[in-house]
Length: 170
Image (tube, rainbow, N blue to C red; front, side, top):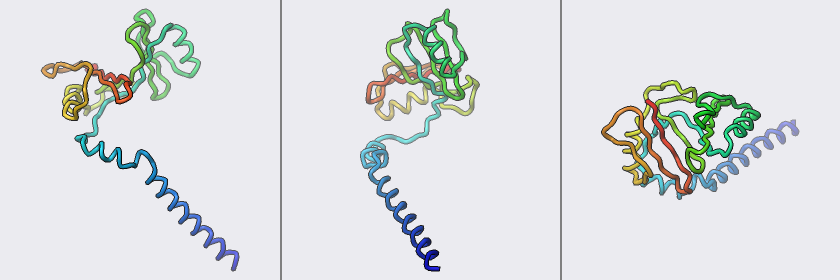
């Protein structure tokens, strides 16, 4: 009986200590700090539907890059070596390999598409995304003509200089 009471008290104490440590950890977590809350206060919140995500890599040798990523389990999904680009897929992960088309690497989003290049609805049109970014004072490197419809793209950089392409194909 005494062992059972001690064991139960031990479980309660361990649970309580774990809870307190978790709360303290969350309080010290940089993602839960006051800095993001202050930054968020200045941003008009809207859950943008950016579409399929991929990383677009600037490669020196498309064939070598393809061979490397195929060894990691990726397979060609789109593009062609003769056009100097390939889109590779592994599950939901997409990598674009581009030779001589742009400098550096970039994050790419495709509004209106899922990771299989299939149309999704509803989605946020790139012009609406552009309007949202501008209303939050986020500078754009290139813009889409807001009077048009259909395909279009915008380019921006994050605070660390990473290039982001939002490229709508429909």
